[in-house]
Image 1 (tube, rainbow, N blue to C red):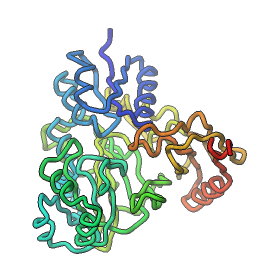
Image 2 (image 1 turned 135 degrees about the vertical axis):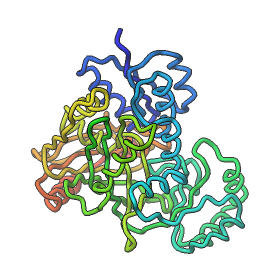
Image 3 (image 1 turned 180 degrees about the horizontal axis):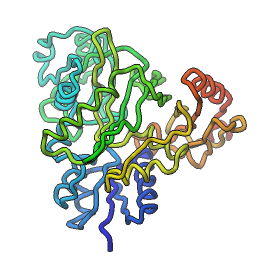
Image 4 (image 1 turned 135 degrees about the horizontal axis):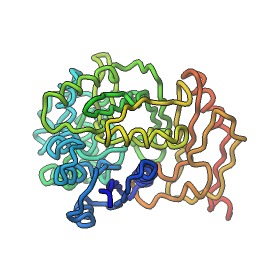
Length: 400
């Protein structure tokens, strides 16, 4: 029997979707695939055992190091080394390292172990508090992914909420998501992104553009993204600088074939990294599954066999919209206008929008659709028009 592709997924909807889409791509290539869903990496190792494998592919940041360790153990020659993977999924260390590689200015950041260390931090502007090892705007702690006007504002909030002892205890003895990172906040609803495919013979930008965020109602200063726009000519210098990673791959051991997704914001001082993900991103996965069914198969073939990858887009500009509501409520019906040719459904039925089982699965129950257009202005206008015609009915409302 051929060696299998192992797809390592977290319990979230978006992670399981990635795994299912790449499993289908593997089947199209004649490769056996196994999906392992687990909430902790150690359960992955227990399930996999010492099995031989073709490639372990992380469908969640939570399993990135586990995938790297499995690839190293099996000698697949793919992916980053475990040490590089661990570096890049830790924002406190990975963002400065990647910023140096790309020659981008670093936002002020701090991981304070004590109140005195935080008070002594020289930066005094607005801050975002986030876990060092988490993605997707999710944190199990009440201070995670919150914005504060300055460090004193954060300290006052900790004191008023009675959370000061718990916060600094966890800073000194962190859990699986690491300590909290305080990073200078750039107040913008737009985040630029770029995804790079690195193989032995090619370095291709497979996806780039902007993500737009909205304030999350009823949850303090948290945010969740509502629209990702794939623009072939993003204004950010991020995509152009990714070619520098090709030099790193050539000069540094541990850079096997893989996919990088990075996010940045722009300020008057330049373009600043705010997140690194050694995996394919959710917006690409959902968008391409709906709009270009061969994309996952071709990307997987490039990773495994170094076949040339060329991005095929059904339109110059594409947008993925999410319609957030209460993820705990059950959707009874989704009413929407007839689907024009430029609108593709991702999740527009109640069956596709089951209530989220986990707090980190906020996007898993959100209705979603893709918009196609020749330019960004038209794409946004079409998305807004279709979005305005959607009505979501919940079970509680129907019963009333």
